[in-house]
Length: 91
Image 1: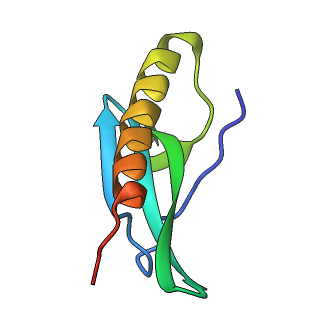
Image 2: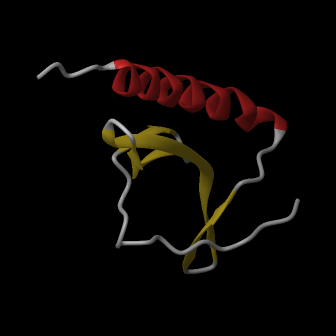
């Protein structure tokens, strides 16, 4: 299983994080300009936390037993993004 280390970017912290066990889905908001004004679009990052000796690392690789957790955190993130992006604010 290929593993890679990821650093957390403190300049753009996640808007929301869903966690089951060591699997997380992080939702990030990105503001873009449209003809109607700025809107926020969201992206989702899924990863697993693990320890390599004393170091904490992250990977986007999952084994068979971890797939249900990855699917569930993605479903939770999907529901959050759908609700957040479906909201319309009227002036």
